Figure: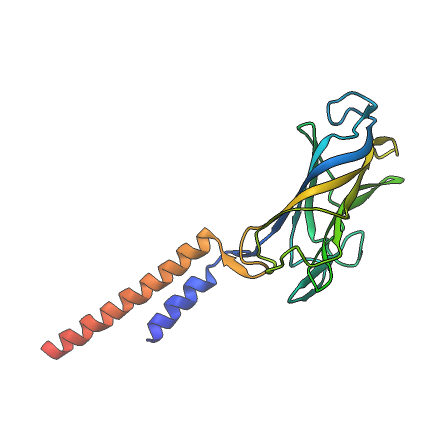
Length: 236
């Protein structure tokens, strides 16, 4: 039994750093631009193009274990970066796609993520913005409904829902010298939330699973060896 313990301990000790990872959350908003100007032809419609009525997709990837976290059975909020500078930002990346052209926002001071379904309101909030020279780049989408019609089953949920009221957002980006790239307002009409695993719990990566499997196999081999030794001693 002692040998079995050490075999298992050795396998666990060999687990690579970071082999237990937290699941990320991907929030994807789709909808239409209410008004906007593409000063720099970022979205391929021409310099100074009017973005009004163009469809958009805004995609955020969030680490639910980062930042300043507040959580309850029907509420989850995490902030960092520009929102709460002393904490790491929960938003890992943010992209805005218009006219099949994607702009990736910088990630030095991203903002926060809120998921709220307490009685009387439903609220999904995602923000990514950073300081760029004298200006602030921003991609902000928010929905606030005066009922709890949006279900909330936990951080690891998969949600896909059409939005009916109160959804809005802003977007803008600047060059380091302050020259504006684009700016506008948008309305989200559909949102999806997908988790890559069981919320902010830990899930084994393949290498971890292989090593743990090896440990289990080692235990089995040791048991067979003990049984064989015991059988031989009885025969003698």
